[in-house]
Length: 130
Image 1 (tube, rainbow, N blue to C red):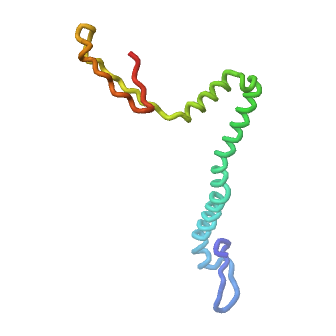
Image 2 (tube, one colour):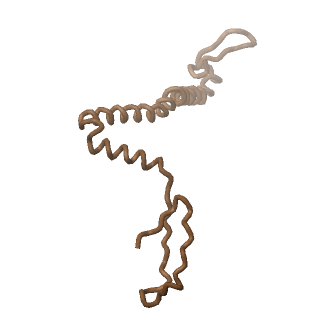
Image 3 (cartoon, helix red, strand yellow):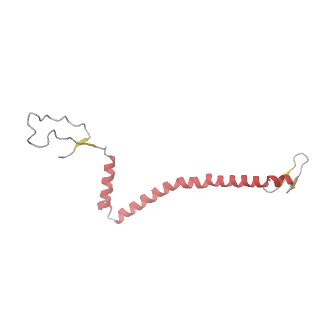
């Protein structure tokens, strides 16, 4: 009622339209009403829609990928093989490459007595090729 300029008289009963008190509070009431209306729309419409966009996007991308794989000969296509290899590679544990430096710079500086057996590398680590 304040936004429309209606002033309620609770003591004597009744109401008045565009009284001085109602006109004083009309601008504040209008700002509060529209603020609550916009906040309600943002909370109940926009926020759930933006959260659902991720699900819609992934669903449509999967459908598009399946359609493209059917068009490009399915499982036997190069794209399908590459994507299968990529998925398998992501599941593998990561390996760490250790660089082992030679003790000498050439064959003249190394002797059979100095060659010690190298300790075995822990599982999941590779040694760089020479």
